[in-house]
Image (tube, rainbow, N blue to C red):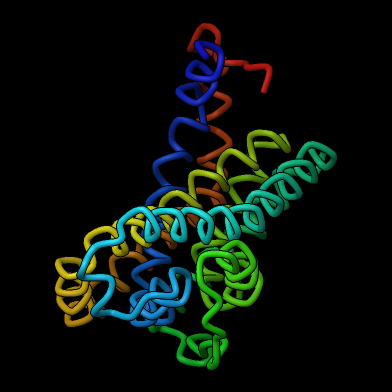
Length: 247
């Protein structure tokens, strides 16, 4: 346990983790997820909006957790893949990070609405009402089918996973991203009445949220393009005792 805490709090991962979590929350707040979130909670529990307000918290919690586990499996596999590739391509990591940084900047600008052609939404328009038993499968479908839609935030996290040059660290970073995206789904189910009011508020301020979130992604891209992210990691290796980890 102490080794895990030490790893999470060390070096570049300590800074990447909050970025990954924030990116997950931002993905939930995106225009192609937030408006559909109440419907998803209904699909994964098999309950109507009225039934969700009446209780049955155990069923709601179970369905929500299984749904989150479903798409987390997809994103964690992405993170392990990108982290593993990073470990194989260490010799070229600097240039690849710069290219990925450019992609993240473009994605961030698209998220802000600065590149209209890249704001096109890709999503399912008809989703079967499977209920709790089908929640993990619906989560898998969400992870695969919504990847183009939440691409800006997912690209940023996978770019950081590549920079970590470790399958395990990349997978962990994607797990944190999944938590940022998944916890709002769980809270929405458990606090349905209050949360739906909050969603209405967030939708009214969606433009500001997208601009702030897009600016965050652009900043991450700039750090990667300029090499400041890698330089900071190198500086930590030299100045901070015990920076290197086994993970």
